[in-house]
Image (cartoon, rainbow, N blue to C red; front, side, top):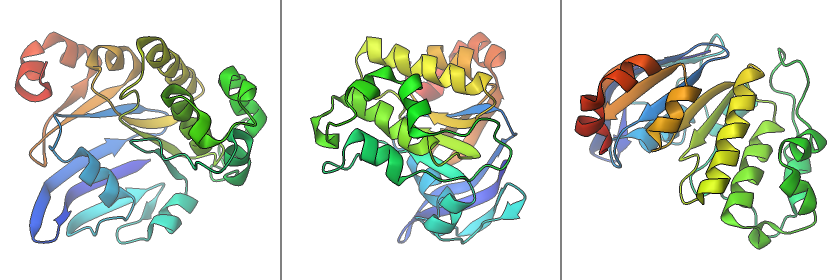
Length: 234
């Protein structure tokens, strides 16, 4: 589904990524881990064409998307739940979900619609007429996930999936992601709650100072707590 080969990128004269490799197969859940400032967000911005790729290649769904514009990348089936949610304050919940409906995954079985998102997150149904700025942080995160889902993406990306959320809401988000995985959704997730990611993800990639320093499956990551101490700040 996604192959990033030797990606190099940065800001102005400052290089942040130094040859990053990452692969995600169709239907897989992969995590991108690392302390703050290690290049995770830079990699996402480069992936979405918001930062220029200074070296390497990015292939998505069989196409070389290196150098593509963000809107073109989105149209081929990549969707992000951004850090900070970025809900529109002057749109209702229903308007958010209606405005972004698209059909970008030809292989999907049951397409995502606003009504299907309401089934996934009943709380959003209750708040359907509320504006984006009238929602709690947890409700905004649910809305941001729903907004991405109604584009029917091939790849769903979550940047800081549960940051700043109450424990109960975090569990609702984890339950949602587990259901999406069971449905075959391909997912890339960034989050700091490694314990919860172990049961969710197929593989994990750790970044340190713009380089991949480790990749492996959940049993391998669970068994080597030294990795957590060296690279994850646990």
